[in-house]
Image 1 (cartoon, rainbow, N blue to C red):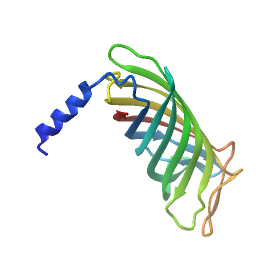
Image 2 (cartoon, one colour):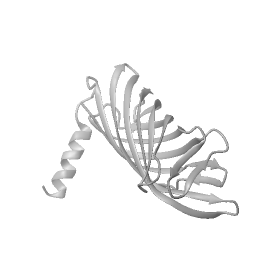
Image 3 (tube, rainbow, N blue to C red):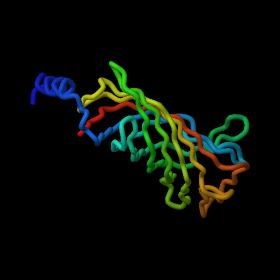
Image 4 (cartoon, helix red, strand yellow):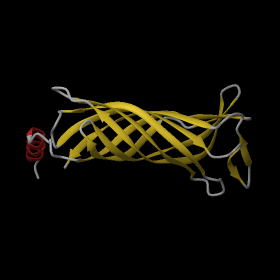
Length: 202
């Protein structure tokens, strides 16, 4: 299909219907995930900023609120930052989160602002086969905007803060060849995220 025809279809969807009877929304997104570190005896385990991908399904529970199911995945690297800023690569790692929660929204003339709260589990999976994986309970909160309002196809932008209580209690990412990292406090992993995508309503 020619590019001009694709643009025409997209614009017609943006202009279609008022969307008031649409109860289900699907939002595939791409995001920039940043921060991410855990204090350990040797220094700090850190996750460099990188791309994250995911998807959200919202179901309207009542006017102004939806139930939200979210899956997100980040491919990055696990690093050890020792005192003096010396950084040692440990392993490539994939961070996967599955969450459920609620989205609360209001409606303006040009956009729909909202806030979200979710809880679930996060899986930290090192690519190095001999190194243990880690699981943890996690939560997220954030805010975003969807525009234009009440359309079956719309743009959605969002900022979100993640926190994961990494499983332990004190030994993390153990390896048969190089031992374990030992956390020096409650192993909480904080991360920020900026996301964008196209939201489809049905």
